[in-house]
Image (cartoon, rainbow, N blue to C red; front, side, top):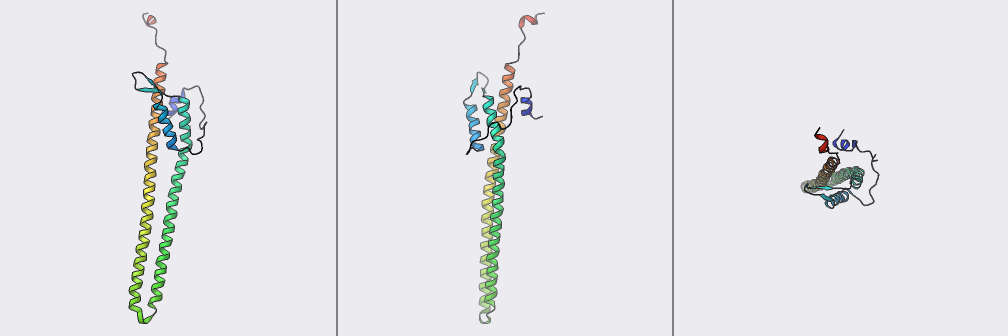
Length: 191
């Protein structure tokens, strides 16, 4: 049982997952901003550095994160698939350029009076085509790597924020439970 599950184990209220679906246009960052706002605007517990957060509102936002997080992962998969499509298209274009250069080189070398010149031109065309193909592939790889690294950084940041939010909720819940535990009456201890 996780720490989050054990924190809710004694709660008499059953909390259905996903009770509030995110609204259109909502993303993980928006929900995290709402969580931060909820904690920032929460009533402070004097001398403790703690804040009392509306548990239902906090858990509703966490439920929305649970719904959106897989969607954001799907977007990452779509981006990776788009990267593969760009690479495939770029490779196909590079192959066409090289094949066209080879055909042109073959055509030019068939003419006997300009064989030497044709070979030089053909080699230059092939070299240029290969250079263009390499540049296209490098550009596509750099773009895809930049996008995937940015997405990886963003997902790592979001996961860290979610973990901090869950930790704050657990600390708040523990503090609330400790305040509500009955204290022994001093007269009864004197027995």
